[in-house]
Length: 256
Ligand SMILES: CCC/C=C/C(=O)SCCNC(=O)CCNC(=O)[C@H](O)C(C)(C)COP(=O)([O-])OP(=O)([O-])OC[C@H]1O[C@@H](n2cnc3c(N)ncnc32)[C@H](O)[C@@H]1OP(=O)([O-])[O-]
Ligand SMILES: NC(=O)C1=CN([C@@H]2O[C@H](COP(=O)(O)OP(=O)(O)OC[C@H]3O[C@@H](n4cnc5c(N)ncnc54)[C@H](OP(=O)(O)O)[C@@H]3O)[C@@H](O)[C@H]2O)C=CC1
Image: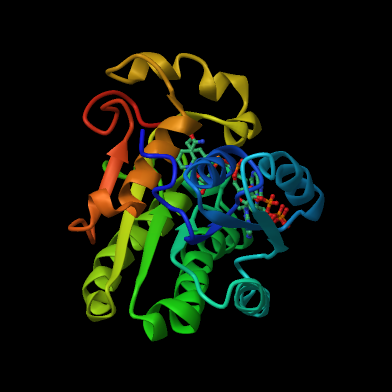
């Protein structure tokens, strides 16, 4: 899509970069010349991904639970010792479980809010203060979900992602004096490792609910994310771009 070296010399952090959408996004940045650090909880997964991704360029990893402030501070330390600067942050780590709203336990609600809203905030604030604000440059892309009409069947993540959608707008304005752009990508249903945790009865017939009659791919998400991070999108900030084959406009979002 882009010239090969469009991100040459740029340093990128992709949370949740060991699998699925994050992995493909990391691969795209590497193919376009960036150095990439992938971060998530499971070291084994990160080592396997790093080994594969190194075929495309310089890929580092850091074990990090985005819900733990100390763990995110260690991520910032790692970036500092590796590169001393940071250009792009992709807040992709996240997840939830399907449940009817009345069945969600307090612990489950808190786990999902901590993962998707608080975790995204910790990483954004800590890395912005360590790098983007003092540098007076930066680029944040938040991967959220298709919450346009709420998220029936996963109310906890709908609330968390709507929070990140709004946070995207606030930070885009507050951090504009530092030349930090903040945008979000809202994927619909994407064929990726993440979908494997959902039972077949939930996934069956999902593509019929999408106007374009197909699920998205991890490449679709990575293409949009790299576009938003690139100079081609230099006048775009505070935006959430839906990537859902039109599903926000028609069809069931998700059912339990
Ligand atoms: C079509 C869809 C579109 C979107 C797709 C994607 O996003 S794909 C991407 C998808 N990728 C991912 O989603 C990957 C990441 N997702 C995750 O790691 C988990 O879903 C997490 C966010 C809950 C992490 O929580 P954690 O590390 O703290 O793990 P924990 O195990 O300790 O759980 C804490 C509490 O949560 C509750 N609870 C948990 N599971 C269930 C369940 N199945 N059922 C009911 N409740 C559940 C339960 O209360 C539990 O405590 P308890 O009662 O057992 O003492
Ligand atoms: N696939 C889809 O249809 C859709 C996906 N999304 C969102 O896109 C993102 C990527 O999903 P996808 O690639 O499909 O699924 P994956 O489950 O493969 O990706 C989730 C990634 O996040 C990491 N992660 C989860 N919790 C934490 C945490 N607390 N701290 C650090 N890392 C964490 C996981 O790694 P580890 O286990 O090592 O921590 C994993 O690599 C997620 O936020 C997902 O919810 C949104 C809409 C639709």
